[in-house]
Amino acid sequence: MQLVGGLVTAAIALGVLFYLNWRLTSITLLALAAFGSVMALAFQKLRPLFRERGKINAEVTGRLTESLGGIASSKRNAAESREELFSRAGRTAYFARAAR
Image 1 (cartoon, rainbow, N blue to C red):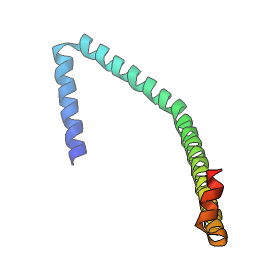
Image 2 (cartoon, helix red, strand yellow):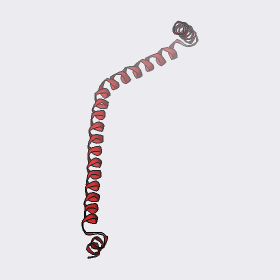
Image 3 (tube, helix red, strand yellow):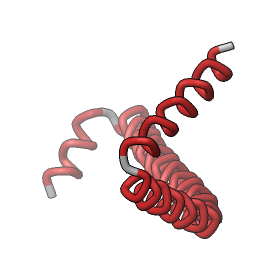
């Protein structure tokens, strides 16, 4: 119902505008139609670019996640090797080695 009401209101308003000044109304409608056509054409061209951008963004995010996961693994492995050194030689040997 709102759609029909909106269309009726727009038709009445367009009729009033044509009654007041048909030249200015015609020029305005042509300008709006040209703008709409240019925008439709632009969105047809840009839509594939936005899809490509999404793919690139997903790929970069995936690589970043893998890199950060690798860093976490490296830190975990380093911590495990330090723990192993503590358990084998004790704290004094570890600190003596670290001081060198």
